[in-house]
Image 1: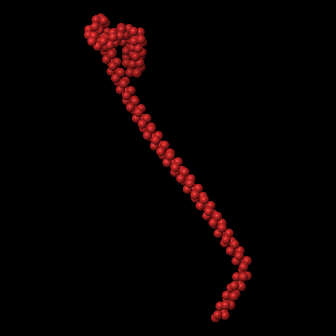
Image 2 (image 1 turned 45 degrees about the horizontal axis):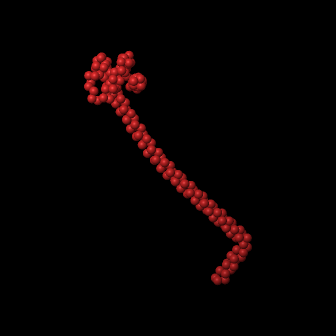
Image 3 (image 1 turned 30 degrees about the vertical axis):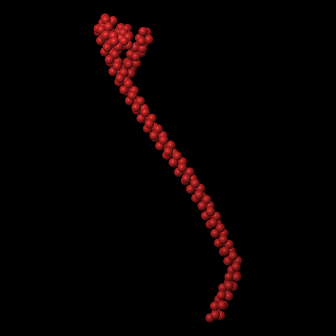
Length: 174
């Protein structure tokens, strides 16, 4: 019985805090209410017991009516709280599902971006190789051109002699 009294007192405090119920009248008559609630609980456990037993045991119809009203209100408040809990659970599941979808999408995008970055790095490395080859080819072409120019400068006398022979051959043919 004392466990039930403690349970009822704790529940009343909980309801005052959560729902904001004003229970000062019930708090004043708490011992009577708790005793009546215990009787009601006993009677509820015996479904075939007639209701008039409660009237006989309480000897106080207003207390029984107050208790019945309190228990009805308590049942309604409990249903309301249960509905709020279910709504919060649905919202929580929805948020979790949305989070998981966004996380999966972000992971896919991250993987795709990593692939794109790797691809770009390979392309940049290939371009650098290509540029290095072009630079070497350019340096080789410049070197050959310098060599040809040097050869022409050195062979300027030979070239002059070739032009002279060519000019003489043209005169002789004319």
